[in-house]
Image (cartoon, rainbow, N blue to C red; front, side):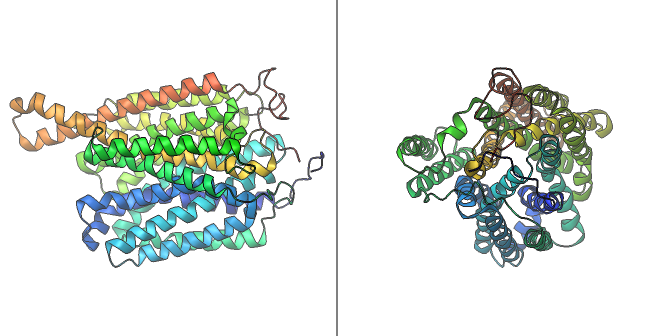
Length: 497
């Protein structure tokens, strides 16, 4: 590996457009199906017990296989992995859109997760090796971060439009043109540097241990929602996850070519990014989940209006990422963007804890959404860039995969955790207030709003914890922060070839 920095790829900005499009497709797919789920359930006769698997099958496959996908990108080539991931995702989407029964739909969702696990880390690591100049890199990751942060809300809008005016099946079919354009662009425009390819063999024991461990962890939280935290199967899954993940760490310390080189996660800055981002995503999932139900069920918004109600949050994310984060990243240490960003987002959640049965959108909801978007956008951009800070180029794929892993596992855990909290809160509220209820219908809505508010309080606390972790762990920019060849003069990490 030469010590000189490679000349920037002249087509890198065109490549960014296609990489960002692919990332948008993957991120919005996590939420676009949520809006369509009631229609799909009625059409295919999916039982109430099985409907959660339309969401969970995707999260399980995605979260469980991301590290594997990141290492495949390093071994096989990021561009090739990117194209294969896009092609498989489009095929799985076509199968899901044409599904005639529950089994085919669930299988298609799992297959989307598998190919998403190839696609997502390949996309992020392509950016890491194509943009090597500090200010350009800040701008590129600003755009990418805005899409990663806002894609979920865009999915809600698009899901509402497609479900209301076309058919729930189009929430799957819409991925096909996205993928076709991105594949064409990847073939014509994207070129990755030849340096940095990891030629070691795949760590099969590591793949099996971390995949089964993460699946057990996510599935444990999913079962906690339905069976309770102290049920035998829930505790058994958590115990299995602990054993498998501890075994994974021990294996990674001893094998010659580990799936996840521990140097990637033991660096305090990268570790701080993965942990704080995972916690922040738990908070975000709480907001999307409960605010969507609140707007549709309590305020009786249509699917389209519900989606549009999230637009100010998307605008806030884009503004925070491209105008605040990208402009300050080369001047301000990363933790002074991430910590205030998470804190501002938590303030938005604090406002949203005050929702009532008859809350006004402009007065009670809009300010919270704007603050949430601004804060998360500002924090996401440096987090995405720091994911590959100081890593050797051959580890760029797996370092990128860790960001997506923290997001997907955090999102799956957050959905189950906050659902359980909301359900417990609703039960307690009914016991305490049932005797005073005058209208059964009104009492049902009041119970629902109380449970949503309680869950959002927890999201607020979790985001504050994310802010604290980012402040304590992330020290890029300080004079003593020399890490693996990174320059302390740049808040933006630059890969050295």
